[in-house]
Length: 403
Image 1 (tube, rainbow, N blue to C red):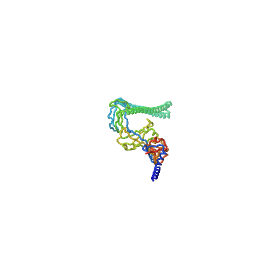
Image 2: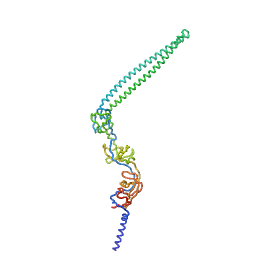
Image 3: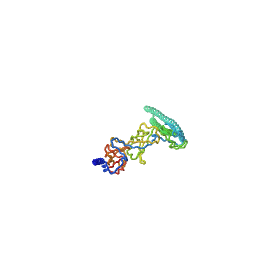
Image 4: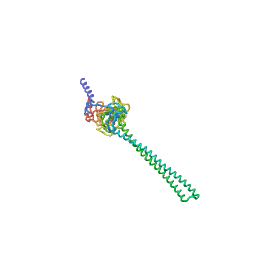
């Protein structure tokens, strides 16, 4: 009975140990289970995205410049709140004021000359018309003399030479009248042309005066938006030249996010893509509105704008996490992203069985997001794979995962 009990115990031990021995026999490498991480392959919607730290910038932050050379007077301090249209600084430019006064005087002189020319034009036109009217009167008198000569000839009481002289006088009077009328018309055209030329000169001078007045008006530098004055770039009562930066005004009501995206995602970026901005534990919708055409330090500069209501209390240059949604793949086979993609080159995975034996399998991956990767081939839904670093497995076909 003792020997029988020992035999039964041996058989039980052999039966229970057989699977364990089988595992040891089939595995060439063993790795503690606690040193790995696993994930289950499943179907779902894969959102391909990229996340980066963005810097808050004001969407509207115009820099104001001096419009002329002179001495500048600042009316505000840095950090002061201003409203649109408020005079922030003014430039004292004696040279520009002198040019405006000279242009005004020149305009007044040209307007007087134009009025004098108009009077002269009417006077000369009147003289020409007077000469034409006198020529018309001479024609009328010559025609009357011609009729008298015709009557006298019918009665035979006028010499032939006197009759011919009456005809010549009429012809001369008619030619003189025609020439007088043509000369008056031509003179009117010439005077009208000269008058228009003088009017053009006056208009040109008026435009010059208007431009100088605009420049003088622009000596008062006004705020284009409501906001806060940034750093003052010039000193009080300092001498400035034209186009010298004076100050910047920051519009605090509209913010955007400057984001540096890794170069590897440059080909996937497109204006109009949706984005998510995290601030204070809350997510806000955004949109990609600008992508730089060049790569600097392996990064692409991009800008994201808030869509709808944005967070309150933002500050210039504040750091926020920004997530840009590149693409969305619906109902795909996917698994949690891990180091196995790098160590296995995205073509190798270890499938863990119920008895904790990891079997090497060839796979094919597709789209990747920050948290997941698409499985195109090699795995099935429900498979459990190792997603941690595969270097400890040393490329073995099967690996025993020990307790």
